[in-house]
Image 1 (cartoon, one colour):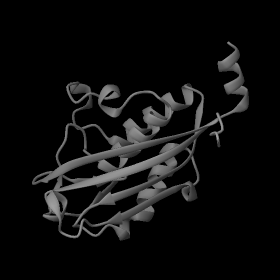
Image 2 (tube, rainbow, N blue to C red):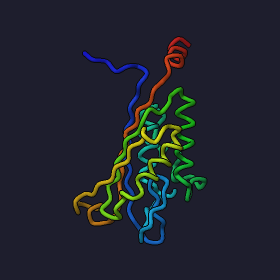
Image 3 (cartoon, rainbow, N blue to C red):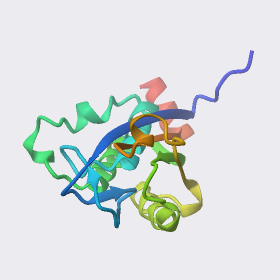
Image 4 (cartoon, helix red, strand yellow):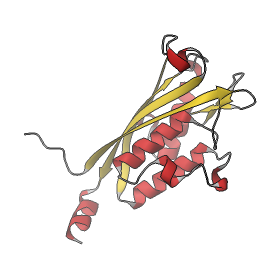
Length: 174
């Protein structure tokens, strides 16, 4: 039987928000010119929310709703990049470093390809990794379901964390 090295952890995140009028569209920390934006308590950046949940899952620190509840007025209209940086701080405090992340945004419109390099740079900066450790892809749902009808946008993300041998040894012996 193959075993996973104890110093690696993988996490998965998912988020979905509906589109509505009179909101700016923010994905991956980048404002995208579009006639609608995502509805939510914060800026509703589904891409960053999926990355945050992947980080929290890999480090077993809960989920975005527990850490940044939508019932807390402090997070109303919050910049999701700030939420991501706070998550990374907590992940590091727990003894982990980000190795890489891979994410996919599902949106019928707008086409996101022109903004992906900016998204990757923003996410890499907030994660404290090189840009080549961040993958962002975009696809459509082929006009199927709420996303296909242009009613919302979703994102998934996976993230790999590592724990240093020194930190792992300290946590298991102490």
